[in-house]
Length: 165
Image (cartoon, rainbow, N blue to C red; front, side, top):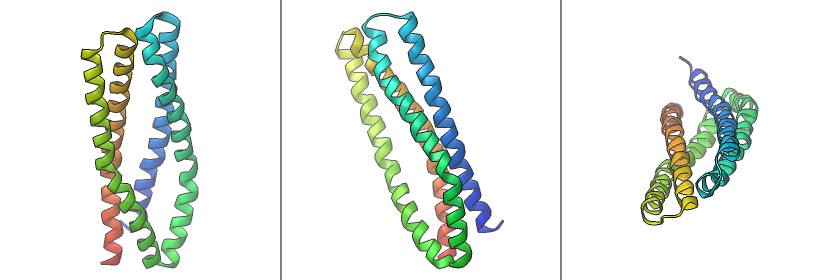
């Protein structure tokens, strides 16, 4: 396989991720709507607000990611074909920043889950329970997404490094 094939696999995964996040955002908004319509009280309300925020962010962020991928592929393909070393330097720098964020994101999710579990068990208010449950759900979903994204990014980065070696 040519490097372009590996690059296309990576960005195809990113585009699918964008569509997935947008779809997940819609699903989360539907779930929030269900809670709003069928459950009243602090438990439901504590879940609804973070779910609404996450749902809207998923639609906007995922949609934006999917939308910009084709332009990014076009620009990077042109750069690769005209100057492989310039491409490798630019993309390796970008991907090193991307890859440096994975441990920070995992740590942030873990901290949010730990705080949420503490809130869940310590504070006996329905809205706090709802908030804690929503945050745990959101972090679990994001962790799943990011583990797959990290794997894809690591493989892509290795192929970029092979250009310069």
